[in-house]
Length: 332
Image (tube, rainbow, N blue to C red; front, side):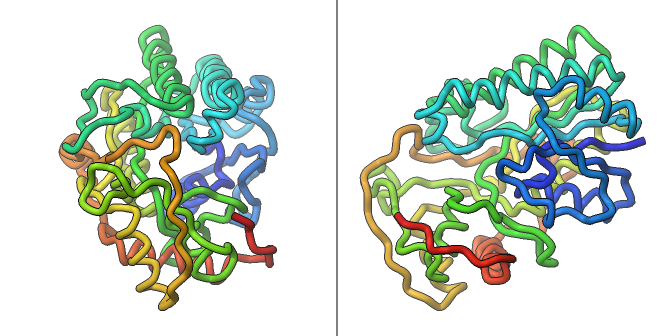
């Protein structure tokens, strides 16, 4: 039996594919390559070019490869873009997830792992946020993911489908073996952008707001290494295979770092003092988002291996240094 990884040629999805292949699993990737790259996935893995919203294509893929489980990464993820284009985000994130679930139910898929986000919590406050906390998202991105969660809950009640929802905090870093990493041009992930600035691929790094009620005035986030994150997915798959009931888990480390702390970590890793521009606040940015991770540690027995900001940054920088292909510097 096979695991379908949607968005498997993207940043997190490609790490998941390598993790599954390393474990001896049979995998098929579905990706429209809007932000993903074929070179990030092993050549031995079957690849289907297309959208999760194409029900006929998904149905054929499920049948042909005898798919037993779906790990769903494919989505639009940039908060400011979601504010400019909410309809695009609801279409790609929510409507396409509905279409994917429809094909999954019709194809007899019993296990579904959904890539969600801490953005569903909105302005969660200073304390580590639990999975049962209120979910008032403050961006269309967060709302589109929360709507997908609701659809998944309702689908599971009506059909023989169990799920795990993983709410990511800030994913960063790269494969320690340097097989894959964040490769999207003009990406908005802070650590990647800072690494690009350190390498001269960007003119500078913009810091959006230094007047937040935090220790240094910049936003605080819980950064999780991408390898630890995909191993949480592997633990979730094992949990579902054991017959575990549908559940939602936070994916983070339980402590945060500010934007300026990240800047200093990238300077340490690179040995370069790149330009930083202080800009105004950006719409849709919460002050602080830090995960309470008691549930995932207890029920999935998940234990991170790379819980260290300098390690995360060092792996991200090493990938950025060797990123295949040459690009013109990104104007900012």
